[in-house]
Image (cartoon, rainbow, N blue to C red; front, side, top):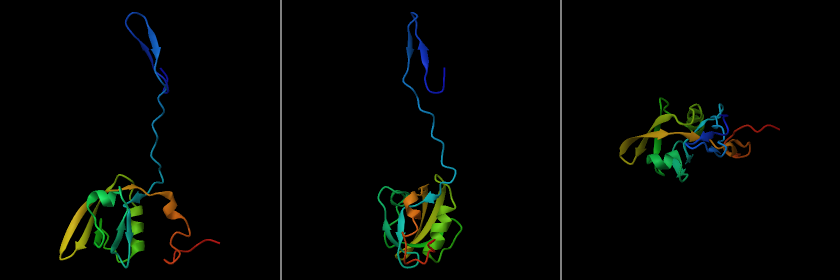
Length: 131
């Protein structure tokens, strides 16, 4: 029996070959964590992408991020860098200030989409662009 096909011998001597089974896809060793939020001024959640870890965890627009894991962020760049330091599938605690109360959410990170790392995605954020 090979990794891609399986042969089954049934009672009565009949032999059938089953459909090929593709090999299991290995996780990307360079994949980085992703939450699915857009931050506005400072660390205020400006938007949440549908069907992302942020949407599934209960984060909301207007939440102010107080803590991500062990980091107390003060800027958008700190939040992105910290989340990207985790692997997809990691569970990260995100603490937010929502109105007068603080809430903590456990967020299971997804894989960061590659298009988020395009050089011209955030031209006003001061991210250097290679010439």
